[in-house]
Image (cartoon, rainbow, N blue to C red; front, top):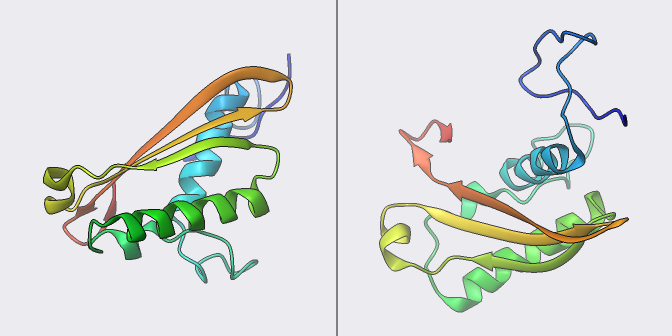
Length: 133
């Protein structure tokens, strides 16, 4: 059985010091979520790390902005998660969601040794200007 990294938030595990992810897709989902929600400059060990999706939440819902977001996501994945082969990035253009401050992101990818496509989805929205849930 392969070993994967610790789940966040950290919790004491039954068989190891911490609870671990059970499969590679769970761990990759964590990495993608972290990459999207981290703003550039927020990670002190690498000031270029992160998409900073918060800064795009209230941008105009036009193709050029959605394309810029997808480009930033693609660029960050190629730098920080180079083992992923991204098949597509979709930024939802549903105006009802955008009017409510909701941004839906879908990333379709494959990983080495697994021919099946995986789907990562993130609904980013501000909650009381505190954070994302």
